[in-house]
Image (cartoon, rainbow, N blue to C red; front, side, top):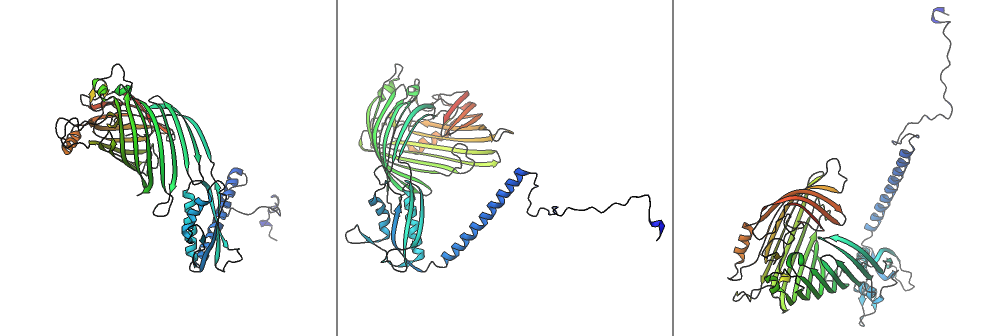
Length: 518
């Protein structure tokens, strides 16, 4: 042995040994270390969810393949049962199901439909399920298809069972609301499925600072439409209110009436066709009431047909970053009563997000009140009532002007007008480094005008619109927006840039509270 290769002074060390149960594994599924308990628990939960999601998707895929491969197999719905509808009339449920069966000569009994395919049976089941949901009286509707257990059933017969859970029948709420420049206290009572046919009876009473008191009683029920759905609803409403107009018109207006309406979905929105009869009384004049308001005081009756179309695709009703809002209102008065006119109003708003945290909103409104009794165009025959005239101005519409401060005046009283328009451009952004705050920065430019037709000469509508657009009142400013669901509060500082002699302008700070802003 070569002694040069051995160092006698260096101690001999044994090789490192590993215990037999030593963990030599490495993370294979991106699992965290055992010491990170919270992250390990979260990883296990996510892993379990992925596994369950995968199994669910796999089962859905298999079921889809099985159903899709047997859609043309012969099948027939032998019976339909609805369970859990304890407070709903059998006759009402029968009216939803009966159109899918062959009705006998007595008009009441029904026998199974002729043999069709499994696809047709599934489509029929889906349609009945949709009808039950459209009634709005069930919290949940579960559907089960099974072979018919009837001793007289044929091999291809199916039983369809809908297991329903009804919503609560009674609802009562008291609340205090702040919005549209006033505060109010109200109470609402509602009875769902009142008579067993998906009817809703609702009563509301409120007391406020501007609407001193208001009451309405409404009965609503679904109606079967032409497409055999229940999305069309009819309602009858009796209403009464008293509005305090002393801040801008030195009077108080009492309103009582009845309204019959039909609501139906259309083009992504809702159509409402209605007829209403209303009794109006302008009175309780203040000592400072102008001569024009004193002449407008008194009692009048309006009988009118109305149409309202509403479509709202905004992602947020108060601070939208995408989508649009459109409302169109048409009124034809003169079917009896004192008022005789055509009135149309429209409102449009669209919002877009420029960058994250910064959005721009554009809004516009238009309104026209056109008297119908115009064969001679005399002042008497072309007059309109104060209750029907349009009002414009204030923190909710054209900012930096007084409440209903635009248009014709007599002293301090706003008389209203027959033609108005307004438009506004707003830029809304988050407060720097505080995007989660409910307070936003706001900059705006508003323009609008309210005019009354000249009763001393024939009305030239085109010329009136041209002159109105050529002489706008304009304002601009900056401010803060506070989101206080469901109310939006604005604190703005601005100035009127252009104003007419009759406008009530307001420079400096202005506070607005409401649900809809220009």
